[in-house]
Image 1 (cartoon, rainbow, N blue to C red):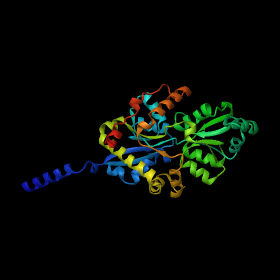
Image 2: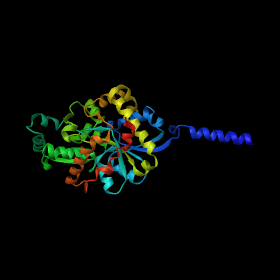
Image 3: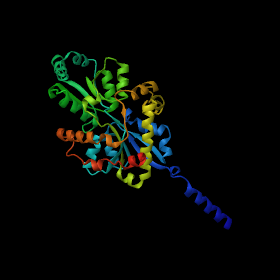
Image 4: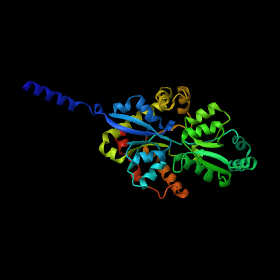
Length: 336
């Protein structure tokens, strides 16, 4: 009996001595299926999330606002999507913290074949929309995601503040990411705010779909996809959050240094049989794919985006960025 007791004690001691990474923390990750979320796909595909002690389960969403509902109900722990809905969530008392950026200036504007020629001949982008309406007898139909999302906010900023378009000359139509891509290819809409890999896919299938405005033109330093953690999960699992950020740092480096290798896990997450690794590699290297990790790189641009959201009525008031951003996990990972 004493021998058995000693054996159990020895086993217990060995279990306690195992590295923390062996004690997997379940984490439910909500994600938008876009190239801006590539770092989390790479981190998972390369096994870095598992090495960090995480056992991830992924759920795909069509937009950030839809994902906020899941976050509020406690059905996901980590949010990987646009920054804009998070500001709205915090004003409603939802404790969610941005711990990493993943990409900036993702959103671009493209024109379908019927609208594209007007931009080539008009004196200004506003004039292109005006000429289109005069000839077609209707406003240009432009697809984007729901109000409050980064795509919607960015499109409105470009239309009204940059292009100075007349609101009578355009009609904004809210729809999901897949529906936007399909509508563009079918000619059901005249233009759209999209991001990679949709940009590479639609132009590959129809070269007459024209890139009209880049992300920097639409909203300078446009904050894109971020990784945010539900406060309750973050407080209960601080080391797991640090491990998540560390994995994202490694993944971002791989995306920049070796797009060919990074394309595999991204295609596995996004391809769904409708595209291939070569297309994803091209999307990763696109001007619309600028990968970053440090959350500080988007704080000022986020303030500007919030101010604009307040001006168009999709945000009641600006949320303090001191609560929205938590840089401690990144600092812990990147400490000298």
